[in-house]
Image (cartoon, rainbow, N blue to C red):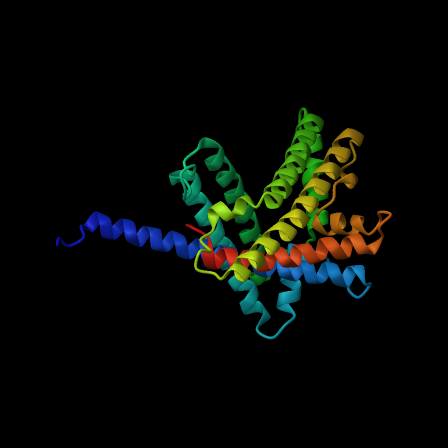
Length: 272
């Protein structure tokens, strides 16, 4: 029986670090979605004026005992999430299709998304900004994009990509494609069914939010009006303005909360 080589030991340590970053990042994502879901439920019942987005979630966490520590922890968790996605973009993800170009491109896009989120959270924790709502940031970014050459076309393309991404998320959730990424064999049948339910309901709600936000961005491009673009908070509030009234917002908010719980399940059982 031979001793493991230095290369094997290094590879094992690298994998352990990547796995730790992934699980820490997924757990952090779960915290944010649960808090956003709770804030959206409060809005639906007229009991909260705090924005139901990342900024509102950070403010909600900061308002509790040891809140600043919690916000720092969220920022660190988002850094871990960005590093994990970066490793997938560079080296490929787990699974037989993890090295496909499309998977790597998606991982690179997620790296940028979580890097921006991490910077915002850490800035908030340090008291150096990060307090502007997602709606304000969305309108400002849209205004800059529209002012650029071919800005309307680029903004519309971004909105279409966001909306299509939302549809892909929802369809994937309905088809339970997340099962391929999880190792739940050791769970009892009831536990696996519970994880499935969380993934389906949460993914459908998350997909609905992305699709609606993308549609608003396309509207902003077509009308050449950055005020038509909506962040997460305004997008969620728009569900209450449909014929279904606040009950549609209740359904979506509950789904986002459940997606947060599903993220915790992913942190425990995702293959990395």
